[in-house]
Image 1 (tube, rainbow, N blue to C red):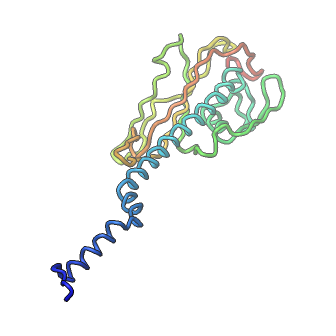
Image 2 (spheres, rainbow, N blue to C red; image 1 turned 180 degrees about the vertical axis):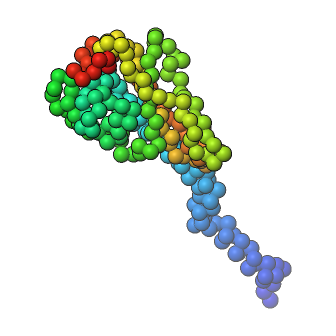
Length: 223
């Protein structure tokens, strides 16, 4: 007579199913991704947040260099603009950065140049600050302090437009700052790049230079 096994049939089936489950690794990738996936995606988003800010900063620096050259050579101070202004006003200068400009220079030659602000940046978020300095000093390049009301609206930028000097404007130290409120927010993994209200980060591009010797426009007494 055959000897019967002492292990119940139900236990045998349970062991067999258990051994199959232990050996089955088809879903391990899904389980692993569910553990590390959120952290990985958060890291990618944090890198993207930071990379976009660096890209915007570099674009702003390029625009500041080009805009600074208009002041360096005296073009902004002496140009006869298409709107009739002699020498760019604060609004003329900002508009030239945002949309380009055309007119006649101090020698009577027509000029035209395209907008200096990259398409990624919008003029409504840009503030232009131009000031004179007595010497090259780090404090001259400090970022301005914006003031806001209780609703987060800008009430004061502490900026201005002062590029004028007695005579021809030769050897004047000018400080040009382009300030941009980049829309950002609190990123993943606790990344917080906000330093202004309304989930914005202030980006500042500064150019400091000594103006070249240039002649005023015939319609100007000083420039």
